[in-house]
Length: 339
Image 1 (cartoon, one colour):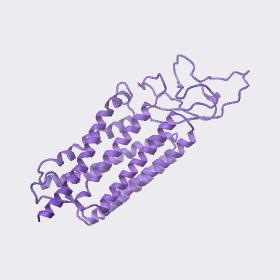
Image 2 (image 1 turned 135 degrees about the vertical axis):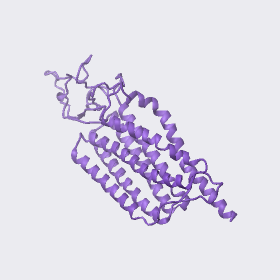
Image 3 (image 1 turned 30 degrees about the vertical axis):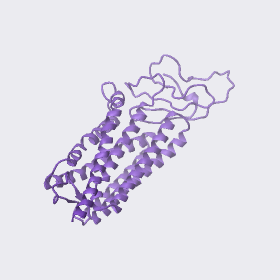
């Protein structure tokens, strides 16, 4: 009996660490990026739009929504509290993943110049993933996690995940893998079509890192549900939620901060920006194309008629700071004008 209690105690300690460590990362990430968030997202310095609102909701939903989960790690909780906490955690996970997915879809939607077919494709994958998740949970026959209350020395809400529940949850989380794979594929395809430039590098770099890290995290979560002992199966989902929320926050901050040199980080208007330098020019990357009042020409509005230099054929793209990365193709340099 002592050996069983010792093994169970060791597993419960690991399970609590799987919950506590991600929450430490979450609060550290919030403190580390708070100054950047205020600078590029908070009103009145920055206009509020759909992207900003979804970003801020996701930001504080991930922060405040984990407080009850952090509280559940400490102290002796009643059976009713732990049972209600499990229900809360299940719905909270769905809500958080929906907001993370919404930010990903907005980013891809803007990257593809607001192409409705791309949006419909991503929405279709999301609906399919949610449908599979709901089906897998509803058809589960395990009765949900069982709360451990027999050993008073074990603190926190400790749960045992039956095999049937674990298998169905693994199926539910596999839909997230499919969605992340689609997002990465669309990001990689579009950025390779855009060409070189700082924004392109940021999109490809952040998209690749987001996909690799989150893919490994989700895969680890699925393997934990399928292979780990019953006590450890419920702990990995917290890590997955924290990593996904933190990564999408970093991506949105990096995109919003990818402004041209010398530009204030205060986006008072939806000014478009070009992030790709035409080949054969000496203009630095991230030069600004402002539709409005400017102090000096940035790109020449018209080439000299006497110039025999070849026409620039590279494609330039504009950037909408509110939507994140709205790209509008300009097929040659002559189409660019400063109004």
